[in-house]
Length: 212
Image 1 (tube, rainbow, N blue to C red):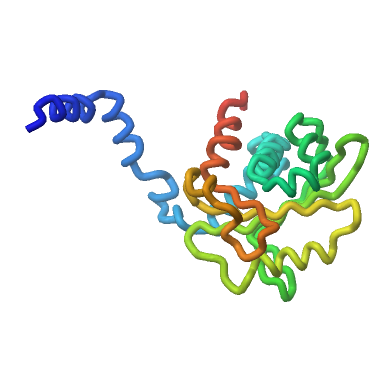
Image 2 (tube, one colour):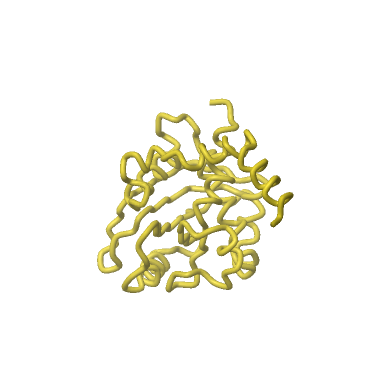
């Protein structure tokens, strides 16, 4: 009978910080109250609103720059080499965004319907390019019919020489499981897989820390 073990267990469970954390994490989120916590469409709509520089939040291009940093952070080594100039400009904030277009549920003819499409006009190191973010968002369902392969082929076919397409596979996978992946879970391995925890830590938290 471990008397000391029971003592420390009870002390931990009754600690005010433990109780506060239990209350915080057991409380339903706003999305759960509305019944949309696992709805991909609602998540994508909210992301599109946050990332749109012209929306009422007045965050300008701050969120999209943070998203680009997340993509750089999770990109494989081969992407770090191919896009080295762009990635260096993103990390050092030497990138100037002069135009932006965001589309939800973008119809791609025979390639299907893309969750979130972002097209940017970007200047870095005295070079102007079109930068596309092709984002497939999977909150609950799995990829089907090789969607990501079709998206990749579609956008590579319309890409000019100086254009850069970045492909993103967004899922609610845990941070530990994401780090242990040797390749993205989608069919097209040119996609960079990121998770919602990365958005919370590296995009939403910095947004909350800004002077709005």
